[in-house]
Amino acid sequence: MCGRFTLTAEWGLVREWFFIELAEQMERIVPRYNIGPAQDVLAVIDPGGGRERRAGYLRWGLQAPWMKSPLINARAETLHEKPTFRGLLERKRCIIPADGFYEWDKSAGGGKQPMRIMLTDRPLFGFAALYDTYVTEDGTRHHSCVIITTEPNRTMSAIHHRMPAILRREDEAEWLDRSNTDTSQLQKLLQPYDDASMRMYPVSPAVGNVRWDAPECIEEYKS
Image: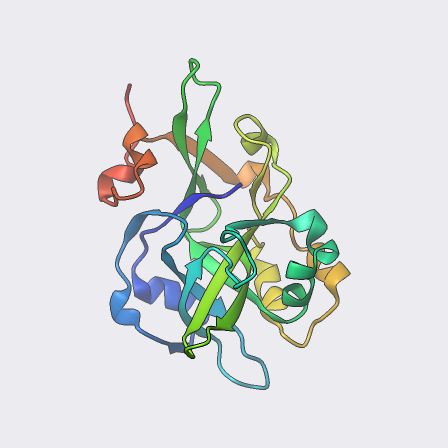
């Protein structure tokens, strides 16, 4: 699964890296060291029709009135089978920018050692995600998203049976292209990221407290 991640890069780099032309509420962009479910996360969307790529905020945890609880992750392999996700895969895809994510190593001496995972071949990357909007009876609009997960690569399989679907740099435009509704082709983009371009290191167990959001979250932990 993917339950925590980081986005510590400056806004200028994020905007340049993801070719963002329009941005809303960017005064809220600050380094974030421990992003968790039910929080607002930066999302990149291409509205199509010749309009400019844009960024805004979505609540992490796909929510609809008929759901018992928000969904923070969706399995890549079954997106086309689930009515909840099938239509979103066709028309409501987005990218969630990140520069690292956390997973807990449960084999570490019988405890749970949080690990930060990063890429070595680029400073930023994007999680493949889906989003949706629903309107309540009082007219309030709720925008939310779900991060897609896939099978783990060798690095991740040592600590968990899933990993977030990180898009290859060359696949990001295709994922955002709203004119592409070929779900079988889109699902082929949701592969485990190259193991050779990934590294992980231990961080403080205090990362388990989602309220702790400070630079110390990403420091290597010396037990």
